[in-house]
Length: 274
Image 1 (cartoon, helix red, strand yellow):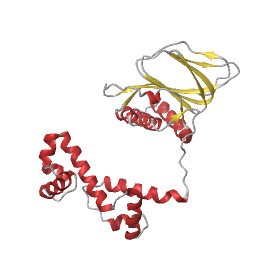
Image 2 (cartoon, rainbow, N blue to C red):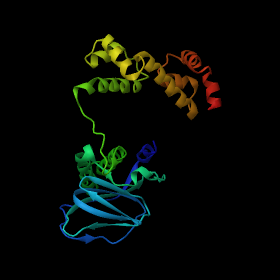
Image 3 (spheres, rainbow, N blue to C red):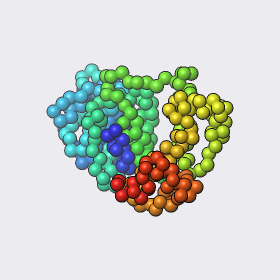
Image 4 (cartoon, rainbow, N blue to C red):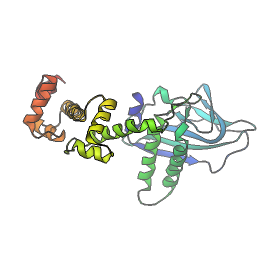
């Protein structure tokens, strides 16, 4: 997914403003552009954005990301009112942050509306504050904003809102269990203990896990270890012994045997081919 790469680079805030109250008069900002990206959130009312040669209409809860170098300005129509928040940012490590095409259109905050409002307030308040870690907290809040931004649907479409009903409990529990297993490959974890943590018997847990993940918990762990090992081998920095330890194998011999059984290649052969 191209969106994922957009928020992986740590962001650096260049601008943060949240209007304290809604403007109730016709108003148009001067056309301008920035050397950084600008994300706008329409907190209340309605507004028009002139972005390059196109016009975008936003309603309360919509967001618009204007890429660096693109000429734009905001307009509040006569008889309308609008309250807006803006955050300007680029990459903290000077890596290029290209805006995916899917994020260049107005996006509806949907179920995350309250979160966006809160996070914009956090960014603005922390940027202007002097409490311990204020700059770091502002940038962490911005990174959360960018993650949520990549989940959104274009404004005007019907979002796939998650419904927390009784029928969704089992998939949520099993996904949580899968994430726990995948995140603890180096630590021995008994299926019995994981089942107890989710208030299930071991047999019921194993049945649900297989139904929702398509494989047994034990097979899931084996595949997760092999997947992690392949990634580390491709990166080429660690020895086979170090990779075996990082993936939770008893020793390098057990790792090599499992790896060759699965891929028909030794770890060294796989690394050479990769």
